[in-house]
Amino acid sequence: MCDCVYIYPRQWAVASSVEGGEGGGQRKQGQRKQSSRAKVSVSMMGPLPLRRRRVGVLFLALVLLGGGGADAGTTSSYRRKLEATVEMPLDADVFRVPPGYNAPQQVHITLGDQEGTAMIVSWVTANEPGSSTVAYGEDLARMERRADGAHTRYDYFNYTSGFIHHCTLRNLKHATKYYYAMGFGHTVRTFWFTTPPKPGPDVPFKFGLIGDLGQTFDSNITLSHYESNGGDAVLYVGDLSYADNHPLHDNNRWDTWARFVERSVAYQPWVWTAGNHELDFAPELGETTPFKPFAHRYPTPYRAAGSTEPFWYSVKVASAHVVVLASYSAYGKYTPQWAWLQAELARVDRKTTPWLVVLTHSPWYNSNNYHYMEGETMRVQFERWLVDAKVDLVLAGHVHSYERSHRVSNVAYDIVNGKSTPVRNADAPVYVTIGDGGNIEGIADNFTRPQPGYSAFREASFGHATLDIKNRTHAYYSWHRNHDGAKVVADGVWFTNRYWMPTDDDTN
Image (tube, rainbow, N blue to C red; front, side):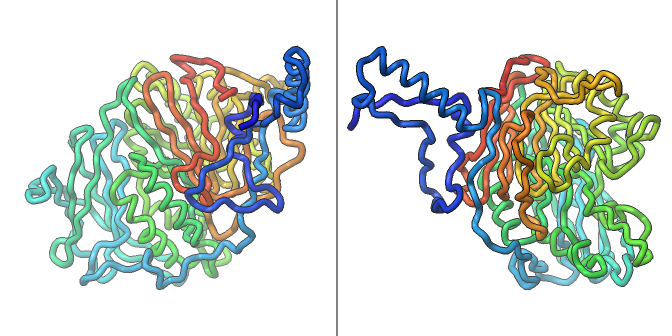
C-alpha cells in the first residue's frame, strides 16, 4: 500500500455518483461504486511543507476542472445504454386482466381527506357495473365495516370505458393496517393498506417520488426499484399512461397502465398531479373536455382542501404538508387556483407539519433544452409566495431527465432594475425535476451549456427518488438511477427544514 493523501473536492458527495462517461463501461448491477476521490502518492511530492503546497494547488486544479468554483454544479458524465425506449407488449404479465367474471381490476387508492383518516378506493369492472361496496377492517377474517360507493363511465372518440367505481372509506385510525375487498356478487378481490400516522412535527415518513412513468420496459424497472426501496406513499408529479401518444388517444392504454401500477397503488396511496399527457384535449377527434379520462379515473380529496377543482389541492401526511398545483389550469391573478393557493399557504401550520412540499408538473428551474422555460409563467406568479412561506422542496416532472437545484430564488426583478438572475436564498426551496420515470418518449439528453449556477446536479437517465423525513429538522433525499442496483444512491442530500433549521444544506 502506498503512502497517499486523499483530496476531497467540496462536491465529493455528488461527484461520487458520477461514473461511466463517454466510452466508459457500464457498472454491473450490484457492483460497488468506486470513489471519485483523487489519489496522490505522497512519496512523489517531496518534503511535508512542499507536499502541503502541492496538495493545495492540486485541490484548486481539481475544483476548476470540475466546473468552475466552489458553487459549480455537476453534470453527470454517466451515460445510459444506447437503446430504444419501448413499451411493453400488450400480452405482458404486468397488463394481465385478473381472472374471474367481472373481476375488479385497476385497483388504486389515494388519500380521502387532509388528515389521513380516509382513503378513496377506485377500481374498474369490465362486464357489468356490479357492486360498488367495499368491505374493510383490521382483521382479514372479519372485515365487518362496509362503505358504499358509486360508478361512472365515459366515452372518448371510439372508446367506451369500463365501469369505474370510487368508494371512500372514512373514520380510519392512523398508522393502522386495513384489509379491504370489493367485487361482491361476482369475483371478490382483497387488498390491504396502512394509513399514514397522525400528523405531527417529528413523525417520520418515507415518500416515493415518481413522474412521467408510462408503460415501457424502463417504466417497469423504475417501479420495481421503488418497490425495493420501500416507501410509504408516492408523490406522483404527473404524466401517467401516455395514452395520447397512441393513434386516436387510444384509451385502452389507460386501462393497461392502471393494471401495471396496481401492484403498488392498490397497497399504498399515490398523490396525483395532472400533467400535460392527462389533458387529452383533441378537438380533431371531437374531444374538447380537458382531463376527461384522468378526471373520471383518478379522484383527489380536493373538497377537503377547500379547492374548487380536483387538479389543485393539499394533503397532510405525517410531518409533511403537501400542496399540489396544476400547470395546465388557469393560475393568473384572481383565478380560482391563484386564490386557493394564497389561502392555503396561510393555513399551513409548520408547528404540526414542518415539511412543506409543493408538486407541479412543469418545472420552474430547468436547464434542459427540452421544455425549457415552459414553467416560467407559473414561477413568476407564485415563486415569491413560496419563498415567503419557506417551502422546503418543489417537485416537478415533464422533462425526461433528472435535475436538482440549489436553494435559489429569482424574485427581485421589477422590469426596470435588471435583477433577473437567480441568487442563493436560504428561504427558497430546492427544485427537483423527476420526470425520468421511463416513458415512451425517451430520455431528454440535451442539457444547456454551461450548466447554470442554480443547478446542483443533473443527469440524463431514468430513475426515481425518495424523501425520507426523519423529524422536524432533517430529511434524507436520494435519487436512484435505473441502471444501478435498486439501493444505490446516485444523488443524495440531507435537507434541513426551512422553518425549524434553515442551515446551509447546499454543501451536502
